[in-house]
Length: 194
Image (tube, rainbow, N blue to C red; front, side, top):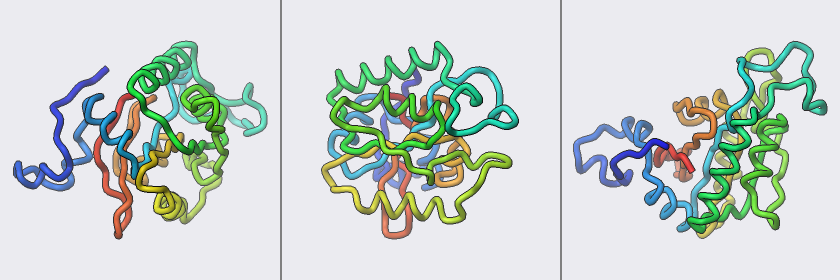
């Protein structure tokens, strides 16, 4: 697991680091835990590691997991380990939203606590290549996050291309981008590996 020097977003200007560099900050597990437990944030999480490939096979359908690229055995172990670390750290997601792709649903189910049922949300569906797109997907995500109580953290499990479109960051499988809603959109707090 990657570790980095902990910087808070507010400290970056004091250190002479340009604002755009916040996107390259990887929060330590201690800092990520502190922010997630405090609430008022969303974690945009890329699904866990998948079987090799890019995109999905031709002719795949959302209602048939066998037709899609799914979590690999290593990916399932990766997400279970993430869930275990989150639980031990006391991280609780009040709401969990997921893309309708099976790899995202499986990631969300493995990370969600038993009393928090992941909710399918088509806005989080992959907008890669020839997949259907939702023109205002980023705005819908921002609007949803604006409704989150300041003491809750929400998990949104989605795809690399979607996270990159909203934040400018292309996370690795199982990596997240922690965001806080601002008056002008979202502020990236940093990359997170649970």
